[in-house]
Length: 124
Image (tube, rainbow, N blue to C red):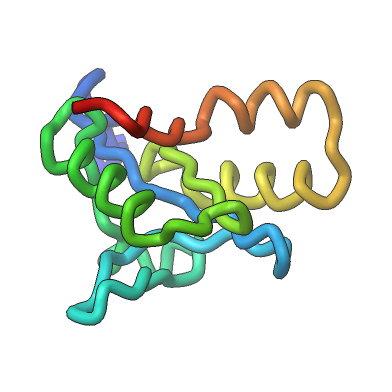
């Protein structure tokens, strides 16, 4: 039992951002934004875990990324962002994809809890 993984202490586990492409019905993990400002993504399986952009939802970096994302991608109607625990990324990505294809009240509720809200615009 010496090799048991200990779960991260509450509040220390980072989140990752998932993006749902509504047209393709696929969920990917946000890797970052390239020099041209294009969103970079990787598949949501843990084999790509080292590439996942990890975020602290309470940090300014996270707030700035979200604001810049929605500012840069004026038409984000085809994309939705979700914030999930790194350890749950595969499960949550599949649940979001499944719910997109076959919506259920439970799935909608879960997706709503994970969804990253668009920042309010028009504030000075």
